[in-house]
Image (cartoon, rainbow, N blue to C red; front, side, top):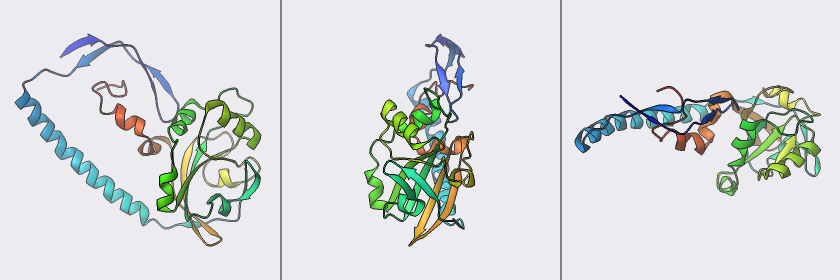
Length: 219
């Protein structure tokens, strides 16, 4: 195994944790094209199996039972809004729960970077769905931060509502993603994840994981 001096880097995980990495990084072995092709073909078998497994997981996710929710009221840019109205007429809703530290100049680095990538969400209209941010910050603070960092998503505050805490995003808690289904005036919770479970929503890690040095973690 050979080594080469690669540029020093830091790694920011989905939780916002940043870790330093070494500047000396191992390099893959050098082989001829035939040997490379055989190794690629062997990997492709695992990649295709992983794709099929992800398809099966998605199918199981769609078949999960759901929980009916009470009539929560959040606060948006135009004032108080019922949770059922956050759907904006659509039947499906995804919420990203942005970590929040009241009065902080900069909020969670991981949440800020993660949500910054979603600049064109109109394609969800074709799927009768919407994707928004919910935070424990007051709406004034939240909208000011949205403007400051140039975020393009719609923001809602749950500071005066038990909604955030009831869906595993309490004050002072971590980030997370929830999915809801609306049937008329009734809203149901269908799915939740946090931690590395949110990586599947980001293109960033998909691109980074294609690279020989990946996330700058141990081989």
